[in-house]
Image (cartoon, rainbow, N blue to C red; front, side, top):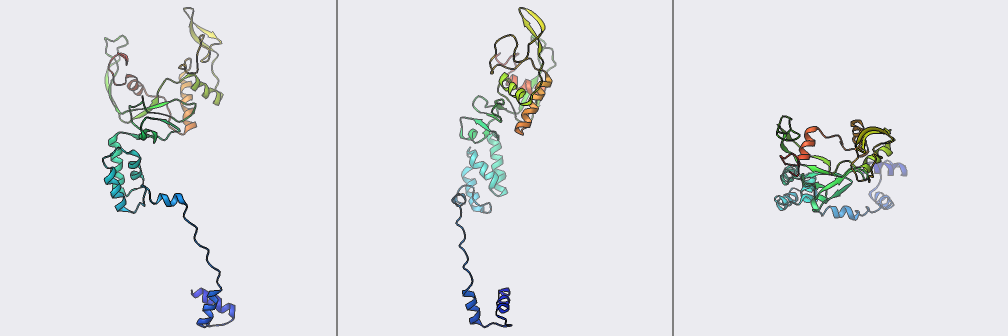
Length: 272
C-alpha cells in the first residue's frame, strides 16, 4: 500500500495526498480478472478416496474401512497417499494378502486386483503379463524352499541333494522362448546367426550346412520353442529385452530354473 501511495504522489507531483484523492485514484485502478475455475477432474479428485494427505480423520476412516479387506486398489491408495501411520499399515496388509505390484504393458488376470497390476505369486494359470508385444509371456513364481538335485536311484540322478531357499518371488517365462519371439530379437538387432548346425536326420547326427534355428530340417511354427541357439545367443536375447523394456531381464540361475521346473514336486518330472 505504501508503494502505491508513493506512485500516486509522484504522478500528481505532490509530497502528500488527501484521502479523497486516494479514493479517486483507487476507483481508476483496472479490475482484477476473476480466478479461473478449478478443472472438473481436479475438483473431483478432492472428493474421492485419495483425499488430502493432511486430513488425518479422512485417512483414519479409510483405514478402518479397508484394514481387513482384500481391496488392493483402495489399500494401494492408502499406502501411496495417507499419513505414514496408515500408509505403513496398508503396506503390511498388502504383503499379508500376498500380492506384488507389476507395472507391465499387458496384464491378464481374472480378478480386479490382477487387472490393476497386483499379481499373486504362483497364480500363473490365471495371472500373467508381458512387457513387450513381441516378448515372452511372464508369470510370477513365489518365494520358497526346495531340495535341489536328484537321488542316485533316479535315471538322471547323481547330483548331491541340498536345500535351497528362494528368498523373493521372481518372474519367469510362462513358456520356453518361442521361435517367433527369438526371431523378433534377431530381426531387431541384425544379429548374425550360424548357417550350419548339428542335426539328426535319417538316423544320423551330422553338422549340416544350411541348417539354422529357422531351418532345422522339419516344419516349425512361430510358437515352437526356439532351438539351435547358443548360450551367447540366449544372453543376447535377454539383454535385448532388458534394454527394450527397462526391466531387469536375465537368464535364470540353475537353482531358479530347477525350482520353477519342479513346481513344488519331488518326482523326476513335474507330472510324476
